[in-house]
Length: 340
Image (cartoon, rainbow, N blue to C red):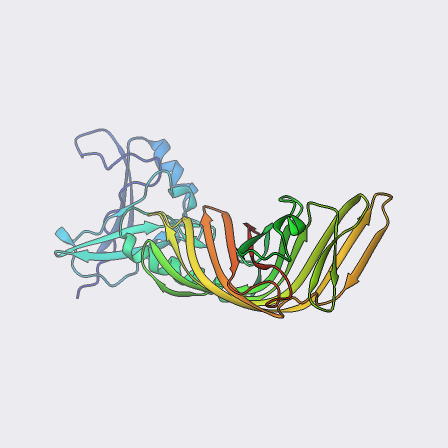
């Protein structure tokens, strides 16, 4: 191992590449003792003046590295003119060696993550991954857990006591809302793909707004969808549940480290904590009635997460019936919408 301290700095920002000795050019030579010098070439004096834009001390400190012998005893730093203005930010020098050649390249930051450098990308993604993992290891309100969408009912088997028209829903009125306290830590990471595990605690409201003027009532032998006998502004059944979703998912990144999207499939289980009907008359009067309406207290099902850029979508499907067997229609809840 041989300690190499810089003998040549090629170009700062808008400076041209080092000109040959035969061409007319200005040079700045900084001597360090008797053996080390820093030589900066420019095509004119204006280029030398532009050095005031850069933190020379920082560059020199960064060059205090232990390197193997470089080709011809020289170590090169190439600063791209589009990135040099950010050298005063969290800039790091990355040293690599291949086939006996030592190369020092600059990776500068963008926000809190290392920026996109075409060189040595493999060493860049690991640092970026650790930074993002630390950010995601805390509990957050959201991370795809919050949702706003719509509900529908999927009939598994028709029964004579419960014709479909009795509980037909308004498509846009039957809304789904959820609030979650969740995490999505990174389990494994490669350059372009990361494996995450989303989990948390979720409170959800399934609102089933009926198309016809019906009133949901609890009778001795089961739930009833009775004709109100009058025009209603709206009539709905709301079910509030506490759920525990667990969704393994893959996140995808481009070569610059920008997230392209994610895809995940998992399961959830929940417990009904409240349910009620709400009727709104034509004159604006409201009536609310709380009951279990023979709803199943426990629920479980499948969940999918789909992310495209910064837009998140979710799909939830209950595997067990909404109502107790023989006490209501044989239907399953299906919810979908946008994650917040």
